[in-house]
Every structure is written in structure tokens, then in C-alpha cells.
Length: 322
Image (cartoon, rainbow, N blue to C red; front, top):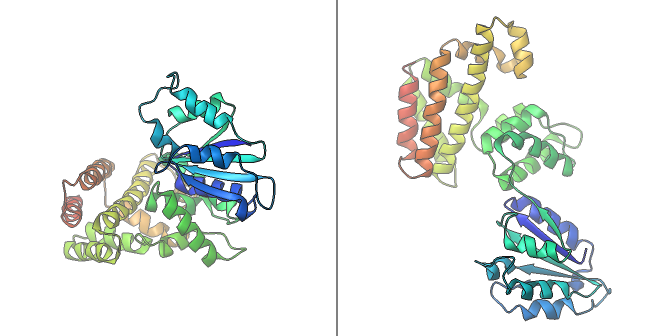
């Protein structure tokens, strides 16, 4: 592995791979170079130098992709980079870190053309997120139930840094033998608790708007990283709740027995009756429209078109008319 490129937008996985590579070398024989702010000659010099305590040496290079802006793989200038990356001492491993770039980047083509290895770490798609959480937990030697992974995905979304942090916290709480459950996620994950969402939906369907507004404001005030991240967490949790209610109503319309619905949706027994009670207050069409409203609200928040507090209050007012 004399030449290795790590790329992609999953920072957590890139950092994990970097730590694994570094662990194979004596710390004194690891050199880090940022060529985004310095000359390329520093790479050639470091790659030709033997290690101090071991012949094997690791040279970590940041920012090489910044030197390649606008460059095509077939351009004559690309040959300069091929020569640079080919002139590596047999005892040196050259590790290129390029987080954020995609696999169609010219650096990928150059590295592969000289026989280098490329590892891409990309953020999972929404449908892949629960599986990614289970796999990441396994790498950390943490046991997480599938329902807990799905809830984490709904609560946090594709923020792998935050997901990794939550897995560590939940794993510590669950202990070495105990799995992470959906109940633990609902109570401990710092976005918004399951109990709060039940209370919010209950207040909405009962027409207690003042209480619903108060619950929303309390959650917005609790988040230290700003109202928009807090609002997005609330939106994801409401969406998850309404998705369950919609699936319950669709199943009931198909005359599926309640016990089968609970098993199919993996509803916790201590929440099942509350889910069915809430589902009875909404029509299938109204729930589908609510999803559209939530998607529009999320877009408006991210684009700065709406204020988080006002946007959520309007959504609650509209949903309470169901």
C-alpha cells in the first residue's frame, strides 16, 4: 500500500480509516504535509526519506486536490502529478486525504493510473442510514436493535458525526451486554424525546394549541446549536410519528388485525395504544398532506424563507384543523 487516497463526504469513516493506517507506524515515522498551503516538493522530499525507528514511513498529505482545480486527467500537466506519485520509496506509504471530493475527481483518476489504491467513504442515502448505523455500531462493538437504528436515523438524519457521537453515548448507557433499544434512543438522544412528540401530537389533535406551541418553544430553547437544527430535529420526529400513524391507518383500512400491525411496525408495547389512539384522529389523506407540509417547511427553513418558530407554529395550527 505505497499510495492510498481517501475521499468522500463521510468524515467519520475517513477519520476511522486514517487512525487505522496511522496505528501501523511508529508515531515518529508519521509526517503530515499540507500542500494546499505549501510546495509540492515537500511531498517528494518526505516520500524519499527513511523512517527514524523503522524503515517504514507514513506521509499524510492534505490539500493535493486543491492544486488540481480545473485540471483534466488527459492534460499534459497531469503527468507532473503522476511522476510525483510514482516516485515513492518502497518503504514509504503516501496517504492522500481528500474529504469532500467525489469519485469522478481528477485526483482519483491520477492515483489509479499509477497503481494507487482509492477508498471512497460517502454519506449513506436516507434508506441506507439505519443499516449504516447498525454497521457502525458493530465496528464499535456496540449492539443496537434495528428499531433503535431506524429511530436514530429519523431523529438525526445523515449527520454521521452526530450519529457516531450518539452511538458512543448510548452504548455507554446500555453497557457491554445490553443492546441499544428504541426506548433508550427516544429518551436519551438530545434532539427531541418520544414522550415530547406524543404530548405534542396529543395536544394538536385535542385542539390544545397553546400547549402545543409551548412544547415546541421549549424544544427550540433547549438546543444549544441554534433554532434551525432544533426545528429540523422536531420536523424529523414529527414526520416519523405521522409516518407510523399513516401506516397504521392504511393497515386498518386493509382490515389487518391490531396485533399484526403492532408486530409488523415493531411498535413498543408501552406506546402501542397511544399510536392507535392518535391514528384514529387523522384520515389517510390528511396525514399524506401533512408530510407534504413538513417537507415544504424543511425546505423553507434551510433556504431561509421561514423562521423556525413561526413555521412550526403555522404547521401545528394547520394540522390541528384535521
